[in-house]
Length: 191
Image (tube, rainbow, N blue to C red; front, top):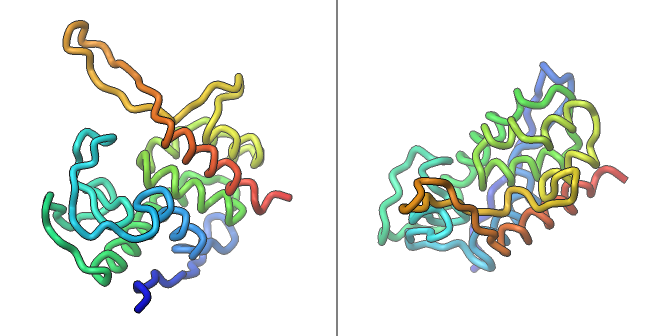
């Protein structure tokens, strides 16, 4: 038996004068690849990269769903599908007002992945969004993973050093790999 799938939706975005597809199958596959691998995680676990925040399914956390997520709790595939679809749609609706120009589907999908991982406010305030809003689609896609000077961005975790009280950033190769994949997939519709 195959796992239930999230169904795509199309909504009209009047402010941008075009269509945006929510819950695109390619986005759902991308999130599964980077959040849980081959299959959804059905037992809630504390995500070490995210300061032990309770996480389940394909990266569901309290930041993307209002449903309580309790470490050790078991979820069904069906519950994951429903919660993921609702959460992805919520994240995407939070992103829509940030775009001043109708984005190509691949840009919108990878902006969604970025926001799923880092929060819509971070994506909306990013250098990538600034470039996209100038119609610089390729530059925006590049800025998902690298600054204009070529340095890695959005690929670090941070902790507070108890001795100094200052933030310390640590490169996480998996995050760098995800950002690089987002950059490639972001540019898919631009050629």
